[in-house]
Image (cartoon, rainbow, N blue to C red; front, side):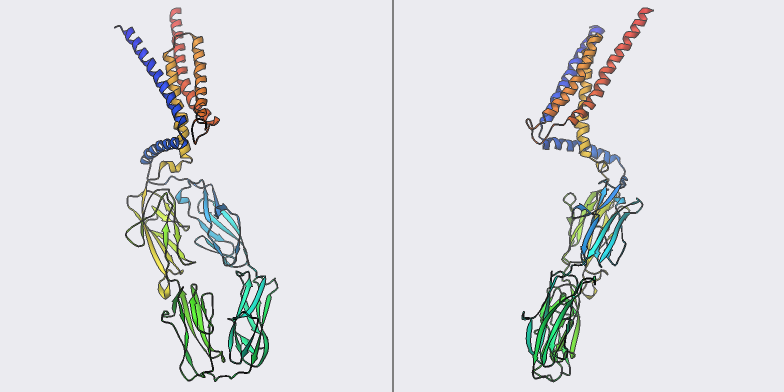
Length: 565
């Protein structure tokens, strides 16, 4: 077989090979267009993961620097610039960064308040301390970016005040030496100011700051409750109750007595939820006609029945329990008590994408993340108010920000120990009934994934490989096929060139039509995708077939010049 025959045979083989490859590519694209959306997305994700892993392995250990362009404060999932907060209430805003893939090393924020007497800040938690306005500023050191939150602290003002005795009546008859408790009720119940009491005739009856009325002499008088709002501008509310004191047998004043504490109170410490009964133990003769009155300086912390001494510990704090003679209130004895939390019941968790793994220890966890993958910690505990602080064995590798977000900065062969300390007191002490726990997280940090530094990675993969890349290959195959089937003649070649371009655009449109709900599920047609497809197809077709035509043109001109010579 001559060389010419061999070349002709090889050309024929290549012609039909490229034609077959072009047909296969077109069938493949049609099949892909008909796939349901979930399956198509899965394939794109698989391709993206392969590319991501390869690029990640080629990358360094550190986090690629992506500085923030904007910062905002989020409350309840919404961007907030102004907030109204009742005095005594607290809120912890979340930070939102743009771009979303802002590097971990740019996420440590500093908090400031323009007036600490209005808004106090501890660890990103805002507490309304006093009536007024304050501006809270959170900034990112070194980036020159900050966000502001205007906080208006207001008072919940009572609109009604009622005063009754413990039996629910607004008037009562007592004998000399007896005592009774007043109940002052505000509407609404969460009004922020307190109520004070006084008697219009203390010779008949006096009233303590806790609202205990002592009948002292025969007569009739009103006891008055006064509610004064904090701002001092609104009128005070008053309510009255009437007491009539009749003759009674006044006991002899006791010389001395003591307050016996229940068995569940040790060293002046009682725990939330505990119940018991205080009792007065006489240390010398006491008139049997006398009785004892029990009071608590803060019934919200520990309530006590005025007559029986039965108590219930309600919330953390300090209070003073006093037992006094009903007839002679100046004869009294007191005990200072501290109400403590019974348990912290701390629970740590993270998102489903990067869950904390509980290890063998009671307060030990393990977590594996990639550098740059920020993991918010969710911490829950039984006490209403807790104190939290964080530390890291190697802050250069990873640490926990004040907002409780784990910030991994770079990959490391050795795990980092992150410590979360939780307590019900600012000293993180167990003394005096305080509770404190230490939780540790063994953190393994791998290299930052390449895709984490690329916004819209999944979309880029779909468009680059599923649209642009696939049609780039098709354009090269059809361009090569057209070149191999060339039979000469520039008119024919230009017509084939035009047809080649039209076929590419039409086929791009066809693959989008096949994605309509009429043909498949979970997908849709987009003219923008047609243009993306065609933008991949056209350069390849121009390069291959246009390049072929250019070579033919140059070759023919060279031949003409040779013939001319």
